[in-house]
Length: 318
Image 1: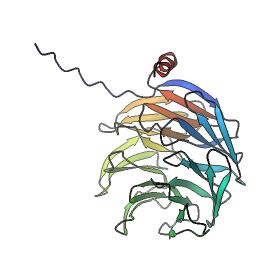
Image 2 (image 1 turned 45 degrees about the vertical axis):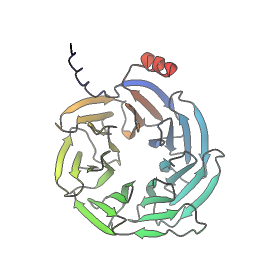
Image 3 (image 1 turned 90 degrees about the vertical axis):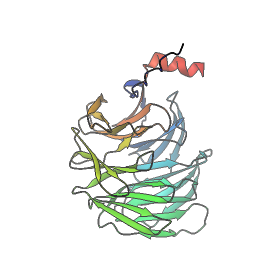
């Protein structure tokens, strides 16, 4: 006798608030998971970068060295290094364990909006108000970038790197995809300043959010628009968007105090997460689990698929 196959479960969404962390570093400009999702980084308007345990909500270390507010940060694949960027026009490479500044990188002519390691953490890429993306060798003692990409005609607001590809979004309304292996540049025009860009997990699509309060899903190779997601408010702030871990949902911050979560294929709104009364400044989706970070004013919220009691029981069981 054969039993029927169990029905595939609908993908769960991070709709339960697990904890709120009062970061005590002014307004939190960005929140980011580290590579394995066990830690989070919070970038503060008080010039500090902080490292927290996601499961406990405890502060592990504070990194001080920027001269103005910290706007973005990233952790290396092996959790040994951090990089951060700031309105002070610099980037800092940090030693995670000691909290010491390993290198301070200067060269941008305006505030640095976004920063990311490549996958081996041998290169840091940074995008700035000065319209350039600069590539820095983390192992070299030289203080000049190894490459400067200056195709943007306005501020570079967001960048993502995946293997040999670099995706950038600019206030000039263009999404640029650099194939670093082939030396090619692909440009897609979106008629509104871009606030955030990212690759889909399967590497086939790109997601962009812009100041016309629209998130768009584009086919990476053809530039064809596959989906448009609206309902949220994004008119004057640089806010994040992202895809859920399995590319089932599109998520975006909003100026109305919510995170909007749409079904990727249908385009319908699956969840409107009430974070608070202010602007949801930043978000980050866990690399493997149904867990979401949001940032509003001076706090970071951790959201999960299960209510807090069940989540704690699961954590204790593992």
